[in-house]
Amino acid sequence: MFKKILSALIAMVSLVACSACTLPFLNTQESVSVSHTEEIKIAGIEKKTAEMLAIRVLEDTDVKLLSVMQDLQADGLLTFTKDMQGMIIAINGQENAADWSACWMLYTSDTELSSTAWGGYEYNGNTLGSASFGASDMPVKKGEVYVWAYVAF
Image (tube, rainbow, N blue to C red):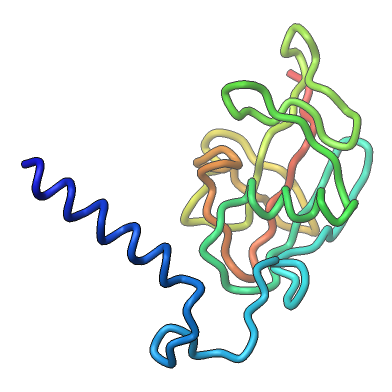
């Protein structure tokens, strides 16, 4: 067992050490951008009000909504706060009510990952379904809209 763990650690160290190598089979592109926002915008703010934020995904990607929001925040296009459990508790200065009588809810046009049975939100003539996941687990898809709405109960 120890030998397997040691072999795995040596393999990982070798990969990390070689990540800076310029061997042809490791470096197939001349330059690679690390930031999502430098080369291609993955998503953009489609609409923003005091109680609603619509994010449209512009490119295919394998990231989650939280990552998209972090990129948009880094670009100065929105602000948000999440609590220790990862729940979004404030967007653009609007905080969830202390008694939870109003809070930010996530809706999406992605019908595979939402349901109107849990509630819907009207946006641009369509009813968006309540998202099946929170921002940290919600995969995003090109062409879909992800709407944060401040909803009172």
